Image (cartoon, rainbow, N blue to C red; front, top):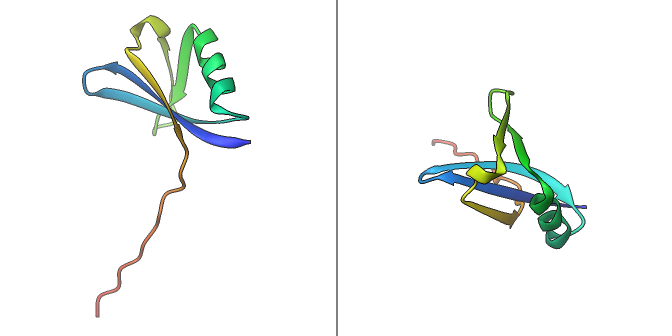
Length: 74
């Protein structure tokens, strides 16, 4: 399965993301459309729920692993 990042735009400047696995973007889009309550876990480990009516825009992006670099002074 592939990883995707779902971005929920709640209001101007407030965006939440969650990473999920799915067979394809189309399958994931069908699942998102059927949700009434959207949930995500924040950086503090708290589970947040909000009504889908509060969502202004949903984006589905391909997940990319973060790039870690190291810098050494010399």
